Amino acid sequence: MIRDLGPFTPRRAHKLDTAILAMLLNGVHDRHKGRVFVLQVGSGTGETGLPFLQRFRDDGWSGLLIEPQPVSFARLEDVHAASERVAVLNLGISDVPATLPLYSLAPEAEARSRRGLRRRASLIRDRIAPAGTPDDLLITTEVPFLRLDTVLQELGVKAAQLVAINAGGHEAQVLQSFDLAALAPSLVLVHPTQGTSSEDDCIAQLTAANLLPFRVADWLVGLAPDRLSIPLEELLTFFRKGLGAPQDDEE
Image (cartoon, rainbow, N blue to C red; front, side, top):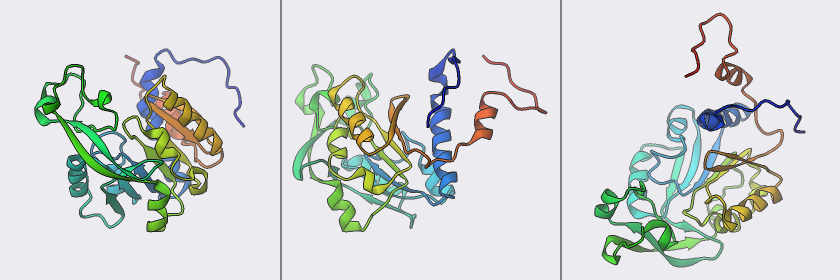
């Protein structure tokens, strides 16, 4: 049950996003006593984006990380080469198994891009290539795509405490490729483009899996009722309610 806390509205709510995401990860960690399995589709290099790397290295988390872009996957594989708790796969995920063209910018085009498209890839050409980009500055890679339920069945994965999906505009199709509710996650993070029909589809699929949808920064957050531990001490400290130590003035 969600209860009304009154009319309080933060003056700069966007500045809370990073802390809220960190508290959500802490809530999953505490709820499952550190035994957290992460299923991530679109992991990139594993060094940027969602802060999972430290959790894998220091907090005992385990996971299955899936990345279709070959250059990003090579780095992801290196990052987790010494880990016995993290498995990585170089393939794409979609609702229909097929070999599909994955677009990314050539290194020289990345260097000139003002949009920060470093090592990003998408099935949608216009999402990657700025207007006027010549074909010789665009890398097209044929990548095998499978349904996620096929991958999970093959690997014997039956549950995941945290699911994260960042698929370059293909998030709705990823969600359609497996039974999200059957994995019983405590937390789901999805990265669709805001204001699109794909985002609407993702929200509908989170709701259908009995998850409560919220937005934090650029992420859709699906919360499972009663499956998170609330880090109240962190919340109170963040909002500067601590006693016995000096509190910094707000900037």
